[in-house]
Length: 75
Image 1 (tube, helix red, strand yellow):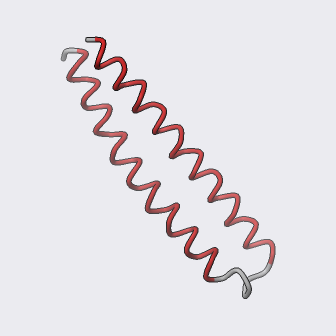
Image 2 (cartoon, helix red, strand yellow; image 1 turned 180 degrees about the horizontal axis):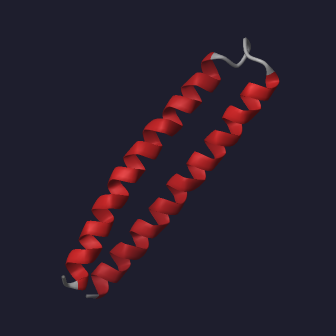
């Protein structure tokens, strides 16, 4: 398999993971906003930490996709 095809498949996989993490992130944000005043602080803090980790994962995937696109452009 050529490097170009491999990079295209890698980008395709990143798109799937990005979409899943984006859906999780939006769901967590919606739950946090809806239950902000009715839940205990520990659960809200755990949700906030989860939002931070999922958002960091989205940023890392975005960074990796741009690296792959740069390598693909150089081919």
